[in-house]
Length: 65
Picture 1 (spheres, rainbow, N blue to C red):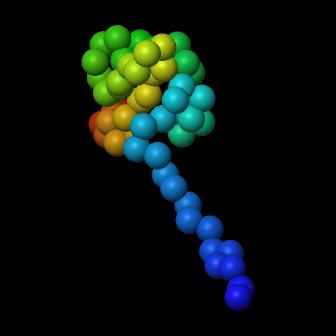
Picture 2: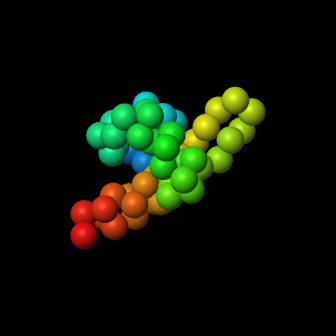
């Protein structure tokens, strides 16, 4: 029986700082400032911070106008 080798690509809705930096090309400091100003959404689970990808995308689109 042949195994299915098709890979499923998953795009996370919540990004860690490194993923958010790569996604937006913004620095960690800038992301932190945006979070502090509540311009993008984030969740803190324990010590981990996860940034909402959709809110980051919306912020970038607003900034481009």
